[in-house]
Image (cartoon, rainbow, N blue to C red; front, top):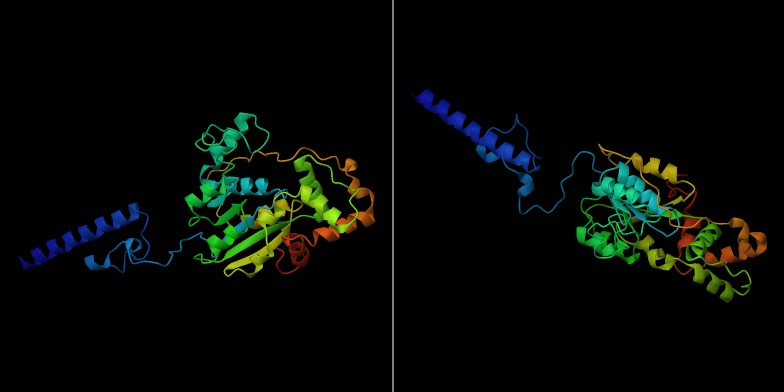
Length: 315
């Protein structure tokens, strides 16, 4: 009878072990044990539920860094954020999240809207008609959190990158899109529906004319970011190399199991370059560009010094 008692005890113990494994699997925290190696009840545990655990747990398809996209206005950032959210997992941005990109895209497509700022009749639009799931305020993003994001795109003050990622659980590789200074200036003027004042001659007058068209460059970028612990700045040319950048990120992010075509959002009216006075005088254009390189944000100087170096993602 002893052998029968031993056999029954062994079967009961096996049943307990199997039940605990099933519970762990359902909670999606089955991380640290193998079927062959674990043979006693004490060894079987859901290690991710350990209340004393402080270090992150890494899973397959997870990147070793968090990728950031510093959304400078008028560099096709809306398109980049939207495209990546439609096709890859764990993309988190003002202009789109992976988890709801499909429905967000459908609402835009059916709305007949012509820009990202429209009333989508979603929970965010009910609070602010110019906000929606494809045009989130930073406060909403910060409330959601960034712990489960592999790619973060933000239209926000540069200091927030420091506040969030200085002590993050993995390094932040922050990508800065760089546009030709004069072309960027003209796009910003077009955004404001203003003409650049080519009658400005002195440095102070030119600086004032640039500032009149500026779209929060000083708010979103600062050269101080180059010295922040845990943040590493990289650059690439935009909008001319959007496709190359999407391909670059496609090799580093996890492809979604369900994808649809991203619907383009216009953020500017069409430019008439022939009507832009700055292109008509090369020496004057160079003078304006030199003033932009002195921009207080340090953005244009950073781009000049970064492009075509080892920190240029696409060089």
